[in-house]
Length: 130
Image (cartoon, rainbow, N blue to C red):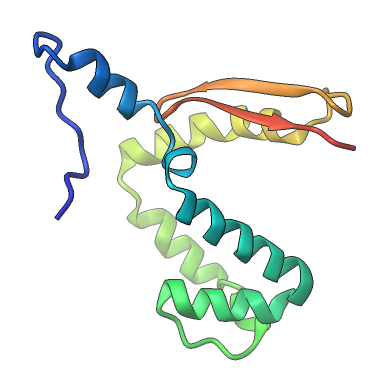
């Protein structure tokens, strides 16, 4: 089993190299992952809901047969919200407006790139094309 959380000690001789590896996004370092994601995006662009059904069933272990089943009932949403750890909910509520501003693109010009510091892999960028 691979280690999910890297433990680094700044006094270790290989700390700089280990830290540099930690900052590399898995998508940047795993060409098979990038190819898989690209093929999923292409399939959804061409096939629409049929591809969404297939991938939902494949990756989420579901057995959906109708795109209408993608909808989550209001009661299930309320139950899920109530089940969230309060600290996680506070973090999500804090991140939501910042994410919305970053992803909205309302302030971005076509061809521009926005970069935002991110906790996981250093930064997240989005390029606006239209």
